[in-house]
Length: 313
Ligand code: AMP
Ligand code: MG
Image 1 (cartoon, rainbow, N blue to C red):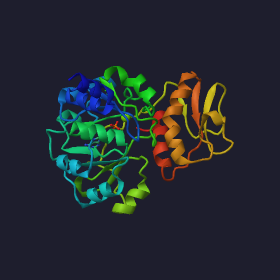
Image 2 (image 1 turned 90 degrees about the vertical axis):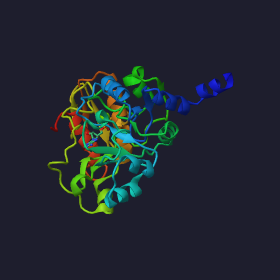
Image 3 (image 1 turned 120 degrees about the vertical axis):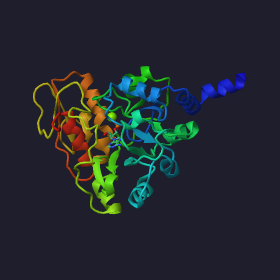
Image 4 (image 1 turned 45 degrees about the vertical axis):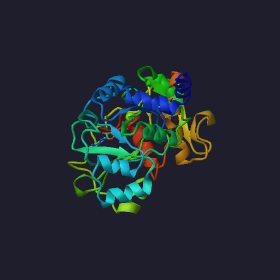
């Protein structure tokens, strides 16, 4: 008995899975950003996530599962959904599809919708916790609502660690921006949120994307989002007095504050939220960000920057 307890205490994956079974919250590493996780089928645990984040209850959560088979237990997949899952899972792509099992992803987690957002995370630690737990886990970013997502263990602990019964350190997040969200509701394929799986990569699998419109709204795309405390200005070539300039590409700004000195979009995405947080700690007059190309992963980076600056409704 004593030995068993010691083993349990020594393995963060087992401890995290036990906490989830207990209806408690867990800091979970994913390849996109750190998540604050709970049993998707437990309304009280899910309510505790909304509470800890200060997240509006109309904004539904993503159900994270261990593999495509587990995804099809909770949701209905058509051929195009399956093709996208086959192409990008495990990985940073979330699919919004009709819900099949309303019990295992409770109403509160879905914000009462008939659809469910589902993904298989690429981070092996995340999948280990989900597998050990044995069911879908909701895991929105571990920040308080509206703030930049945490991309390191320390940042996640600082944001919502006090609400979590257990925490798994998975190192710095490799991707650094939230998953791409694609809706397959109503026979259309629409991009609800750009991410590191790019528009071009999705179109290579399912053909041209449909434009948004009714039925393709993502309830969670709030105006001011991902925002540090300091005001953010985007597309800036030279900083004003007292501003920190986050550069991009050779020779732009102080290399200490560069999103990517070589102009690499993957590196810039991985650094974005961490540098927002580090810059904020210096209490500058503002954070200025150099122009970032809009192609490929640049679409997701520019999306987050515009929201941080309050430019999108
Ligand atoms: P987060 O958990 O903050 O990374 O955000 C999940 C994103 O997926 C938010 O933008 C949600 O609005 C969106 N989402 C989740 N479930 C659905 C759904 N059933 N329909 C449309 N968007 C959804
Ligand atoms: Mg978030």
